[in-house]
Length: 448
Image (tube, rainbow, N blue to C red; front, side):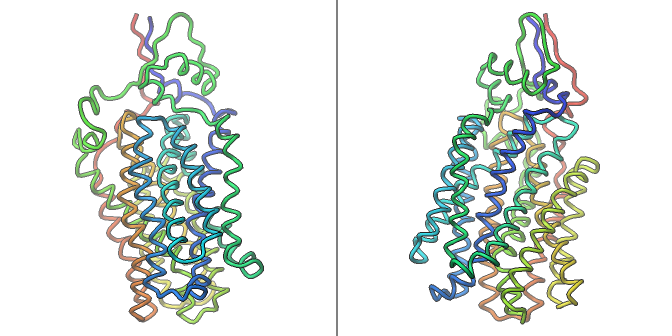
């Protein structure tokens, strides 16, 4: 019986209908992730008025979804290595869709915070598994670009939430954007029917017949004859005899894992801190509230552009070099927002700030997926995202704290720029190579 490396079959595939459908569904879910998270920045000024919230209370309310994401990444995201990527994704989509819709019916800050926590839990569990399943099913020649294309839909969701804040809220009230958030529920029947399971997960469970069928869809040119046993070609013994968490620190990855977590946290602090507080901070600097929400839209347009560019650069330069550049751009552009430049310069800085921060968020997920072997990949990406959520929690809280101090306008942005400097140092210290050899350089293993 021949043994064939399944990863090589996936890697050598050409893009086809299977990949397009997978990218479509992952991107669709990612769009709602961006929408559900960023919408809080649009409704925040209205909630502060309606419920008489202090800046500290508003920050805690914003942090509730981030705490939920941290909880979801640990409790749901890491379970995909046990129950499968597909099951966890379907469950998480149902959870965050229902919880986001329930926000529209919240009557006070407590019920709103609970709904935001549950929304965050679903989102925290789904994103690492979207990255993992796309990495494990995409051709090697365009893997990073497909992942970044998918992650760019976070920015599209953020852009749509900003537009909802501009056009829907004045007409229908702050509840209205959350009705749109619930529309993702309608996708569940189609997702259940069409979303595939990861080949790597199926192989770890010994489901050879399903693997064979899946590989024929991924790579129609693959038509082996005779009896075949599919295997994963990974470094021997990676993760063997270890728990999933301890395996993240094995094979010399310990320090790199810690630096990855730190860069994740700093990235998320900038992304979620700015998306939560940018309209309010700009309003406090003398800009009209309507213009301040437009600034949020512009920043998310930049996020979309930056995510697409970062994917191309990551394929050419590698994740580390791309992240170092983008984190540096984030620190510079955010710090310069506080000088109140002219309109053209302001919009340019907002585009760069959005593109560099969210562009980093997409590439750092790819770096995490590269760092760990397939047996613990979902756990590795989920734990990095979970620890990173500490930064996501800190971002809204930090914004509320800064706002309550009534600091000079420019000082607020200097504080939000500092994590970019820390992240540059952290990502350059991630020294471990990919957990698996580049698949383009592997050969199918055939043993008679």
